[in-house]
Length: 452
Image 1 (tube, rainbow, N blue to C red):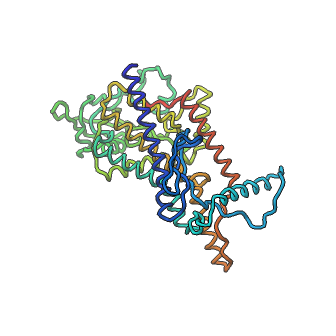
Image 2: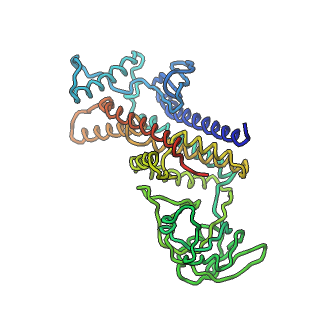
Image 3: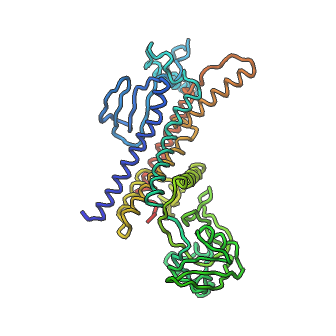
C-alpha cells in the first residue's frame, strides 16, 4: 500500500471517528438536561438499526448500533396518552382516518412505556422551557464542538489568511462573464485582452505591498477594499522586494469580478449562481498564510460557517435539484452545495494525502472540516420539522402560544400539544431525509465536489 493511500485512509478514519464522536456528544446534549430535569431516559443510542453492543446503567440502556448515521435518546412520555373513549376501528382507506390511526398508534406505543413511577417524570409533563432546553441541548452541543475545534485551530495552527504579499500576477484583465464563456483549456489571456495594471506596474510574486493611495496597508481586506474603490483613478503604490522599498503608480481597472469570501473563494447567491460586482481590479492574487489568532477570532469564523450553511438550507430543494442534475448531466456540482458523510470523508482523505502540504496544514484542514460538519449538524437539526430537534421545539413553543391565547380569551387550558397528530408529516419528512441522503451519497460517489 502506497503512502498516499495510507494517508488517504488515515484521513477518512479520522473524520469518521470525529463525526461519530460529534453525533454521540449531540445526544449527550439531550441526555444531560433530561436527567437533570428528572425525566426517565430509557435509551441512549449512537447509530440506527441492529444493536451491536449495549449496557445498562441505572434506568438507562446505552449502546452502539449498526448504522452510524445518527443517534437518539428515548425519554418516557414524549407524547400524551391515548384519547379517552376512542372507539376501536377496522382498517380503512380513508386518508384522514389513516392519519388519525397513525397518531393513535404512536400514543399507545408511548403509553405502554409508562409505569406508576413515571408520574411527574414524563417529558410531556415538563414546563415548556425545560422541554425546549432538552431539545436544543443537541444542537447547542454541536455549536460548542465547532467553537472548541475552531479555537484550537485558530490559537495553535492558525487559519489560512490572505496577506498583502503578492501570490500571483495576472497578465491581463478578463471579466468573470467573459472567463466563464471561454473553454477551460484556453489560455487565460488573448491578445485583445487589456493588460493587468499589476503586470504593467512591475509587481511580481513575493512582493509585499506596504502602502496604497498614501495609506499604510497591514491586511488584505484593507488593501482589497482600497483597490476596489479606486477604479479608473491613478494611485500611488509602494511595495517591498528583497528588503528594498519600491514605488510606482497604478490605475485599477473597472471590471466585473466575483464576490469572494474572507479566503478569496467565490460566493454564491441563494439560487446557487455566482455573485459578481463591478469594482476596481489590478490583476493580482494574495499569498495565503496560516495566521494565529485569539479565541475571539474563532467566533467570527464559526459565524461565517453558520451563515454559509443557512444559505444552503434556505434553498435546499433547489440545491438538491442541482445536485441531481449534476449526477445525470455533464454539469459540475456546486462546490458550496450540500454533501453526504461520504463526500466529507473523501475530502478528508484527499486533504490528508496531499504530498506538498505540511502535517500541521493537514491537521488544520481536518479540524476546520470537522468544525464545519458540526455547524451543519446544528443548523440542520434546528429546522422546525419533526423528527428534527427543531420540530419538537416548534411544537413546544406552539403549545405555549396556544395556552397564552386561551388565557387571554378566558378559555380553559388546552393542555399539551399532541405531537402525534404530526406523525404522518413526520413520516414524510423522514422519507425525504432518507431520499436526500441517498441522493447525496450517489452524487459524492459519481460526481464528487472537487476541492483539491
